[in-house]
Length: 230
Ligand code: 3QA
Image (cartoon, rainbow, N blue to C red; front, side, top):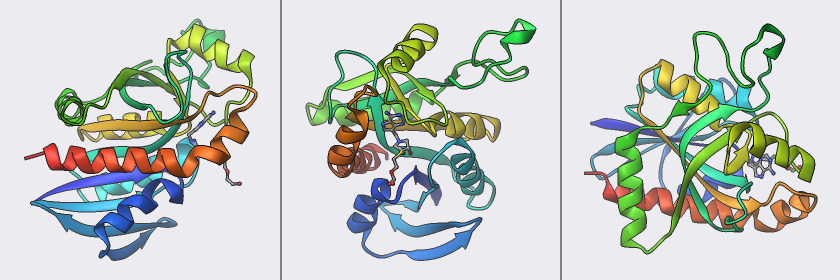
């Protein structure tokens, strides 16, 4: 039986999934609780990492190296950067980058780490499944670059800087960790995020208001993806 690892950053981002699956075993590793259950012909392992790239890297590594996940799916919320994204819209990441990496002093492009890549692509098969699931429900998916970094962006100048330098449509704090770890471990992965705010001067207020709703939207879309997997 294949194993699907589903990761959120905050507890709120996985609560709707735990409510959906209802029964699971709990395994504690590295400060995370992994909720283990089954769905259709899959083992499902769910965890929230805690906020930020370092936490998400550990959780994703544990999913791969301990639970032998065959697929990794991230679910959660994000700040919208594109003008055409509004609260509640769902983004499917085409690729991920780390906007807070800077070794440009040595002539490298912003976000680039030697022996790695500036943009790490998500898995095309999982993305096709996500697009099919969206079509069936008339959900309009936004497909684009997501930029990750260890800051909550709530400033229009920082927001514009990320857009200008990375061509990203959304910003969050974990996606690139999932991309780095999953790609190094050869695990196909995809990143789903529902918009909670616009990363502008009102982002904190919007985030508090819409975290729960948008987290639910992302989580229920994850269920549609699982239903679309054979
Ligand atoms: C923000 C969460 C972190 O896991 C990244 C939400 C939504 N809007 C964003 C934005 N900039 C960056 N990331 C995001 N997630 C943690 S701060 C709030 C913590 O409150 C995505 C995201 N504009 C905890 C209660 O004190």
